[in-house]
Structures are given as structure tokens and as C-alpha cells.
Length: 206
Image (cartoon, rainbow, N blue to C red; front, side):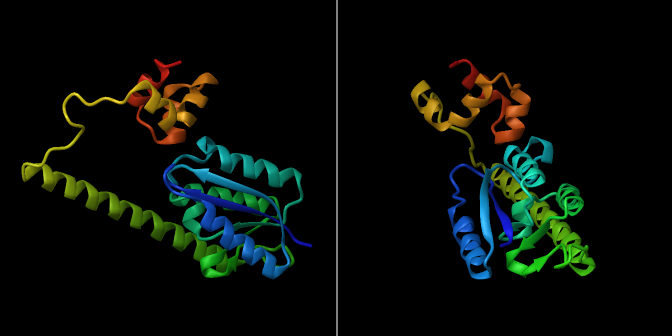
């Protein structure tokens, strides 16, 4: 039976990976693939690969457990930076592991383990499109923000508002866990997407 792992990613802690997991488990069942492990990540897809804990763990796992395929619902779940995505695919190719991308029903390797040239070409194009879409969304958000400010809009918290220590303990559980391990503010910020200033406040609670 084909041994596979599932990899999912959402950008924030308020989003849920479960739909991706359920969809991919169903597909694996239909195809007779055995899901050996599920990796769920909650981090921006633009984060550097080396700072993505679940991605690194997944790559380490497949290298020692004879995994044949990595399943994702769409390419953007693997990442949103073209170079970073292609770096992961190259790592998978070197390990003889095929990447299955569900929404396009394609794999990066053929059934005999050779590189699927057409799918590799498609992956490169799709990753670049995803990067361009992300840049367009960011530019629109920045434009909307500027227009709102120019129209007299106010941003930020209400004067005098601050989060209590109890609220921060609940809201920033992962950040506090990483800080307790001695990871630097800058690296925790990269891993979680939380600002360094907020992390300084978190650190004061330790």
C-alpha cells in the first residue's frame, strides 16, 4: 500500500486545518493510500521554509519513513513564495517523494519515480501566480488603508484599552511556549506572525 503524509496550512490561528485534513483523508481512502501522519501548520505561507516548524518536521519525517507521496489540497498550502515552494519540491524530488496537488489532480513524479516534466512546469507557473495574487491583495489592502486614513478614518485600539495578562496568556499560548524555550523575539515573530512589540509584552509575563 502506498504510504503518504498529509500536509495542511492555514495562515492564522483562528482558521482551521480540519477541512483540508478531511478532504485529503477521503481522497487517500478512495485511492487505497495509507496516511502515515498528518502535519498541520498555522503560519503565513510567505515565511521562510527554515522557520516553518511543521514543514521542517514533515521533510524530516519523510526522509526516514519511506514515504511515497505528500498530499496537499492546493499548491498555496505548501507556500506562497515561488522560490520557497520550488525548494520544497526539489527536496521531495531528491527523496523520490511525489507531491500530490488535489485541486489540479497532478503529481510531481510519475508512477516509476521519474520527474513529471509537465507537472513541474505547471507547478512553477501556479506558484508564481499564487505569489502575484498575494502581492495584488497586499497592494489593495495598503491602498484601502491609505484611502481610509485620508478620509479621516481612525485605526488602532480605543484610547486606554489594553489586554489583561490573563487574556494574553490565552491568546498568545504558542508565542509564550516558544519564548520559554529561549527562542529569540525575532524568530518567534517569524514563526507566528506576531509583532516583536507584542512579543516583548508576552515575555514580560514569563
